[in-house]
Image 1 (cartoon, rainbow, N blue to C red):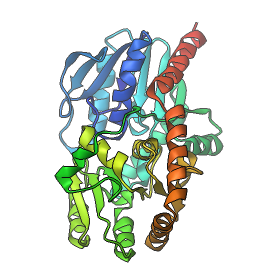
Image 2 (image 1 turned 90 degrees about the vertical axis):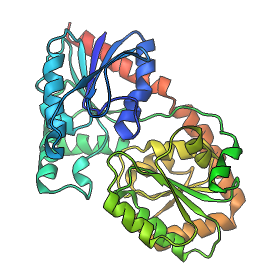
Image 3 (image 1 turned 45 degrees about the vertical axis):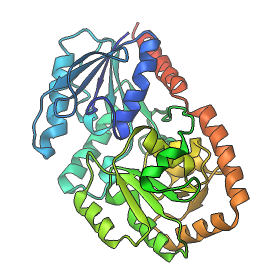
Image 4 (image 1 turned 90 degrees about the horizontal axis):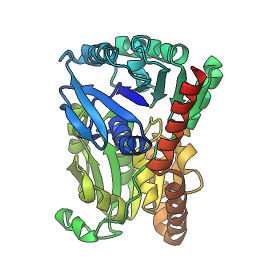
Length: 366
């Protein structure tokens, strides 16, 4: 089928939703779909063949407050000039214009979270995000969510039919530990936190306060930055971080995955997520993991990691201390996590679930 993907900044993906789409595209193409991705011209360029898909960059407003809506409007209007079978919108906020595209079999929207919960947003953006959520419930032919707790919330709150399709990860071998040399690190000799974009909901203040409370000389490595980072907050973190905390900035590739794979403990303190790829990746390497006990994280990591009370640095410090004192238990959980995540969250299986939905949309329109 001919499928247009709207609502994302583009590919290659560096954060969040873009990574999800980037990872799905080769598998959807392999299943026989003709994929066209409409991205921001400030983020991507036109590409005739990107892992089997076509990429079209779309102009929009350079004003941050108008950027998403203007791109979504322009992408929707462009999509109407082509005979698409399905339009797949990723993220709820762009779905505020889900009524605009005109595909043959209908529109599908995937929720990657409730953006209005994020602390950095003002009253007007949060209000528009809440309106977009109502459009998400009422307009698309099919609705999905990457988070099981969030799908349950939608279904209870709106008596709707939102299907849970989780995020996946690329199954990787552990990169060589020699890649740690550039940060003067040794295998199992550091704590690691992957924050992606640095912002207040990532729980990094909680993490740093917990680290200060620990009596340890084990360094704490925090990776993150780049697109959509709150740089004022980032500077606050750097200024309050004690000796032993290393900020790598935004990194990718084997350098990045070597930190996941060879850490003593992976720490995921986020205050809000839908379904975090970072958490999946940490668990997939078998690294003992401690995570905040928000429902979205519990849905992924319960029984295969150690949870702490969200935003509670004392509880996080206590859990880290426990894991250091009980390394064999921590390692056993890490091994179970690797088995479970690798079995349940490969991208090929996730893409097939979307493929089945696309086929069902076509059959339901005949």
